[in-house]
Image 1: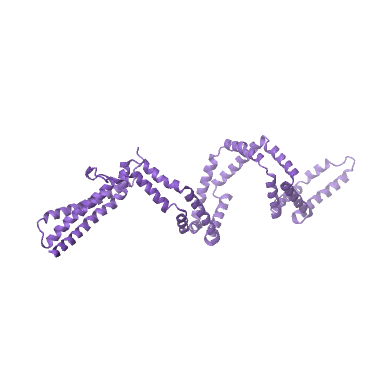
Image 2: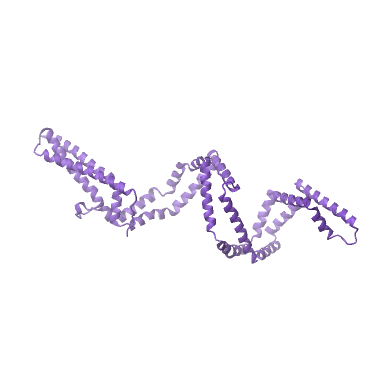
Length: 417
């Protein structure tokens, strides 16, 4: 079975090999013709020419034999230690695997080459150009759309109902929720959410006085005079608006402090109080085991996916603008913040070192495994196609060096006479 498929460049390599073979063989033929024409002329300049041509033929034939013996039997004669590539193909693959593993797939070399590449500077420079950022965002959007498009609703539902919810039911979340809530209160991260809630309630009350009045009228005693009810309800309405306004304007309002104390106490109880933890876990299990939860999560997922796909399709969307701003900031940090660039390159070095250390042997093993699968004749032919042209220079050099050696030998023999 053939595992070596010819490439479009093979014809060019074959033509180059053919030309160099013709050149090397032509030099041998020229040496032979000169040898024949100068035969019998052992004195003077012609003696040097005759000896040079003779030695050139010897050198050319010797190197022709050496080059040919690498890939095939010279003249088809099965001489020992010829057709070495065919016979020792598997050993060659294992030697190449060992060479690559020892000299390329090592942690030290990988880190050294990665550091020399200056990935951080190159990436930062590349992201400086708006067209490059647009290209990067386009590719990320394409990958994201492909990923979202391949996620079926049924698969999401099965994952949520069959894996996620049962896992959440088994996992105690009260201590985690307590720590999370405590961190939020300490960092005052909930202030914006409280401000938003107060603003929405205040604006709703200000826009709907009749609704507030109607709700209060349903709860007043039947025996009170209407004019009293109106004055009390109006006073209550104004006090509610003022109270909400004060809470929104004053971060240290007593109601806000009371809310912070309540959240702090809840966080501590969720983290340390077994009774509160038990009630919280029971509530969690009741919520998560409700049959409607899976459908609700699926519905939310469908809405999120639709919104994401629409945003990914629109280059003018907020998502694209935020992405471009993030890439611009990343480019500036990579170019001007040495600490950020060093952290990135250190992380990349750790990743490359991990893969080289963990999977280097497996990667190198691909070489010997692939060579083992090659047909011996095809392997020899393809290797000769790649390196044979350069090897013809050995034949050319052998012819030239042989001729020079012949001249020197003839000169020495003349001196000795």
